[in-house]
Image 1 (cartoon, one colour):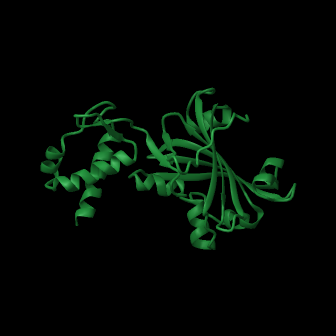
Image 2 (cartoon, rainbow, N blue to C red; image 1 turned 90 degrees about the horizontal axis):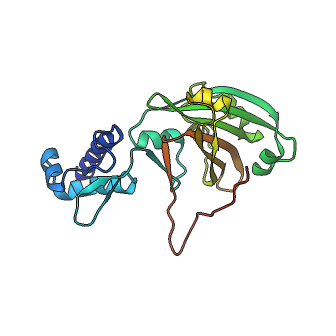
Image 3 (cartoon, rainbow, N blue to C red; image 1 turned 120 degrees about the horizontal axis):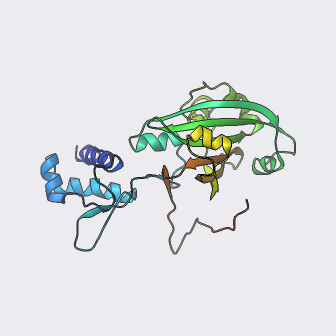
Amino acid sequence: MATVRYLEIAEALRRSILSGEYPVGAQLPSESDLATRWSASRGTVRQAVATLAAEGLIGSRQGARRIVLRHERKHSFGELNSFAQWAEGLGHRAASRFLSRTRRPATAEEADRLALAPGTEILAVLRLRLLDGEPTMVERTAYADWVAAAVEAMAEDCRSVMDGLANDSGIVAHYGEHLIDALPAGSEDARLLEIRRGSPLLRQRHVSATRTGRPIEWSDDRYRAGSITFSVSNSAVATPLERRAGDG
């Protein structure tokens, strides 16, 4: 029961932080106060607080209580979770809808990223993703020819394409490569995300592949500023993060 209890406490504190009840820079109540409030042991409270610290929501100063570091949602590359899985794992409502699904020849970049012959037909998808009812991300994805039919068959309000591929077709992503940069919102992005044209967007481009390395998708995801924070972990032994010059 202690394990369930610490997750319940972490979820309650997470919601309080994300809602702004605890503003950035504010101190959380002490472990003793939280333990009293939740009728839990200090060890259980400590586990809950450690969970939020791992998510990057809170930190600490020497000799002081935990402080709130940010209100943005944090998306880790530690697991290849879908957008929906990630959002729901943090207690948010994820929704999406297909805006278009079109078969067309792959561009040179798409063919290269998907390991296809030039001009191979792919499925180009435009999708809008929402968090708690707010437009958060515009997703433009090229799906390889061998998964196109499965994606076309999905419902318009499909919660997660990757979940659908895994559950219905046995196609599971085991590998991903990600490129992150920033760019101004164009007319279409601004309209879909309900922001001004030229507003800054965080762009994440990524390719997902099967366990054998066969590419499934090449995607260009554009997030509204302030909606998400990406986290990359590294160490002196293994550093999966590489800095690259912008390639436009």
